[in-house]
Length: 112
Length: 115
Image 1: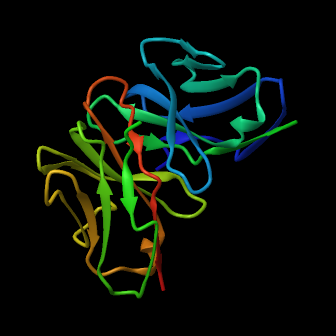
Image 2: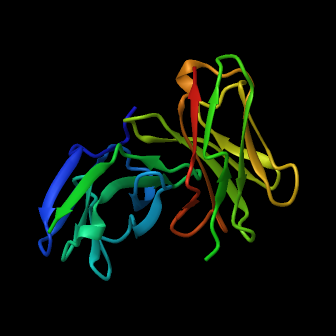
């Protein structure tokens, strides 16, 4: 069962422009949502998170927006840089338990 | 910067063989996890471990799997009799607390290929 969905397997953006990565979830019992970034041959690296009681969290070039009524979150990267090219995973933590539910990932390519 | 380390980086084994994947979590962390990613699929939770016992496990983590913290530093995942479908990248992760944002620190992964 796919509780966390990333429907876009890939995204290509020009350097300097905004990258928007989307994620949908089906379970209302998540208390935190996280974004991870993964380069080839490396483990996922934490990027940014948001509590389910908030609708926005910002950290430098990265902003995560949460729309609980739509069960949707998005990661905005502004401005995008070539070093941002990686696979981005959306993850959600249930409010009972420790296991993160991951989406399938979106491969972002930022072109010069 | 402290990091989670995993060995081996790649292991090739024959179906039916036992495999042990090793992890050294970050030293002051208390919670340990194994996840796996089959090629082209999502990262899947296998098991979490705290205070020397399993705290949560998924349906994937059946009797063929076991985890152990044999000493103060290592955290191991054993697959007793490997199957072709066990071929995947296995990630170890840790965090200092179960509360907070749930941020996990992942190792670089161990690629298991079952022939």
